[in-house]
Length: 106
Image (cartoon, rainbow, N blue to C red; front, top):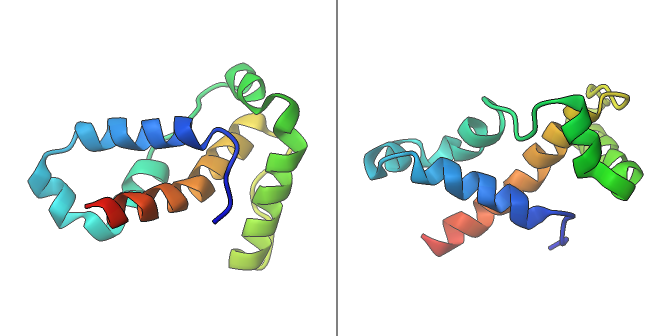
């Protein structure tokens, strides 16, 4: 399994999300946790904040997003010139690993 840049921050985001839910909701939505946490809300809001978060890893992260989208969707749809969109798509991608780790623990 690949070790992702700032995965721990994305894990924290997920666990904060989980803490806000009750056990019944989590059980009822177990198969859709990824969607609810990483697809219905933004991980980072704001271009400045996104650029700071990307730091020197921007091009590596863009590469991960491009490869993921090509492999899973056949084309790249994220606007790679928009730091906020890149960070949030990256969080979505890493979120898949975070959810798998979580499901193994519960």
